[in-house]
Length: 177
Image 1 (cartoon, rainbow, N blue to C red):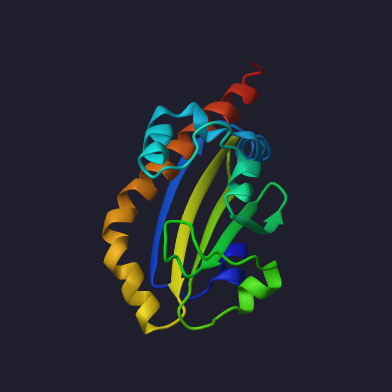
Image 2: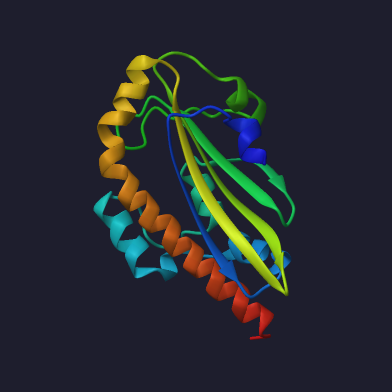
């Protein structure tokens, strides 16, 4: 998987999945075109963190400093960001995919987030989303450990809601709506 190319080693992570009645192509299109603002839960969670809540599509994630690191059409898309995280979204670096892969300066945190699609037969697909977090040194790992307990649940809720949006959109497309 592409995510393994960008972050094979990590200290914190979470994986979620859903099966849907649609082709991998429809599921991938749904991921690339969904808008998180369609979810009341995501809007509420983002408002709590002071993140704008309108127009929350893939392009908007990129404007929030998530960088598309790699893509295999109709199979997987990997997003990433790296920074010191002295504030909620402060100190983020602008790294190319190659720079992200190699980056390991002490005092920083790297995060990868993927969406992968697999054909499971009979016109069905499985969509997984995984987040991986890596601290570049012991102090950074400790910093993440101190907040991961608070961040894991909202992160999982957001990704679960995204999977619901993808499923709804892909299955509607498959039904021709």
